[in-house]
Amino acid sequence: MIEIGKKLPNASLFKLGEKGIDELDSLEYVSGKKVVLVGVPGAFTPTCSLKQMPGFVEKADEILSKNVDEIICVSVTNPFVMNAWGKSLSVGEKITMLADGNGAFAEACDLKLDLSAMGIGEVSSRYAIILEDGIVTSLLAEEGGAFAVSSAENILEKL
Image (cartoon, rainbow, N blue to C red; front, side, top):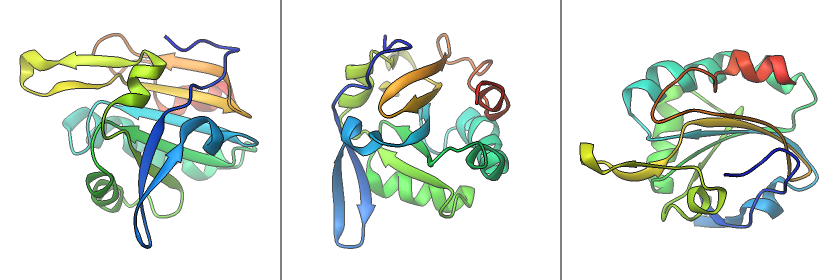
């Protein structure tokens, strides 16, 4: 698993842009910034949509006021789904919704969760990370599909 004091790995992430799908390199994208990175098992899923992400939407201004340049949400899905989910959560410009379409980022970070037994497949683990210039300074990773430590409130305590 990714560790405190280590660089974020390079992996492709995708975002719906003005001219289609934009591909971003994860490490390059966060370099030079202070970022809160939130990983979720699935867009439009109950815990992610009703508990985890609403907290980040509600606390976005407070998080950004702590010298955070950007809040990013990542899930193993496509950029169209992440864009639609962001609209449904009213993230506006406060949270950047990025897709890990092939699970390469979750794999590179060793933050995968196998939900094949539920018919969902391999997805991202649930976590929240603080990055400074691409270096992990705080990691709040959940066990299994739990939602106990990766909340916006807990991230605020670490900022």
